[in-house]
Length: 207
Image (cartoon, rainbow, N blue to C red; front, side, top):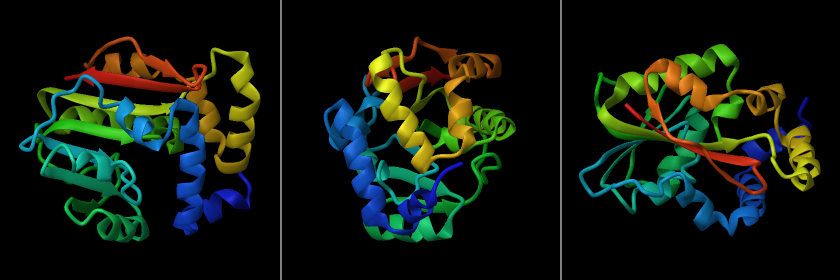
């Protein structure tokens, strides 16, 4: 069970941003963290990009530097108001990730940054199915999220972070084979790239 710090981190953007920046130090800072899941992708001004569960636009602000066609989706109107203020050049849609109001085969890239760990197992499967639906053939689903550390030194820090700021769904993700779920859905999935002692995973999956 998460503490009141979790609630505060979503209520106060300065606290959320501070926590995010501190956590990103493990991979060389926030700028590098936001680029990790985009490495190797071809994104130009015409690329249709969906920033899924965009929150207040932390990843969106990096995506709009690459494409002029970025859409952010989030279920929280409060977060979307912040995102609109922070990154006004993107378009925004309020909806649940497991039931997106988009046509089939619409996006070239769907990106999600440290949000899948918020989902219950059934939600997670529905979201993956929805991402597959809205991606164009040949499109890419790219994600970064928690992973069970492969270096034991990182376990204490990850455990404290999850206890303070996350819920049981984050612990569940540590036991989840994301590449396996993506493959079951029909994606072509490469081997995950691990960072920060294995505590972060980047997965790129092609439709």
